[in-house]
Length: 85
Image 1 (cartoon, rainbow, N blue to C red):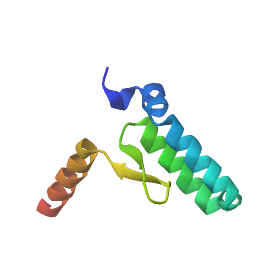
Image 2 (image 1 turned 45 degrees about the horizontal axis):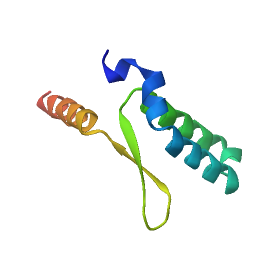
Image 3 (image 1 turned 135 degrees about the vertical axis):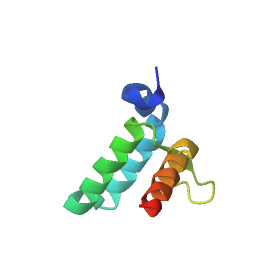
Image 4 (image 1 turned 180 degrees about the vertical axis):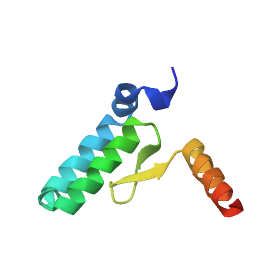
């Protein structure tokens, strides 16, 4: 099954990073901001869709989220197609 179609597996693979990010957001009060909550919801959707992956910054210990190479290529291709129009 394609990773994009397996949200449970995608989320489980990033679970420790998601939990770390949730705790950090709670501690600094970001979960009280509706705009930040909406952004966080979008982040969770992208994780479930397998479009982003997290890593831990060794210096700060914070989670850094980045597009997967496959999704980045897909976006670049879509952008190129839009430029042709």
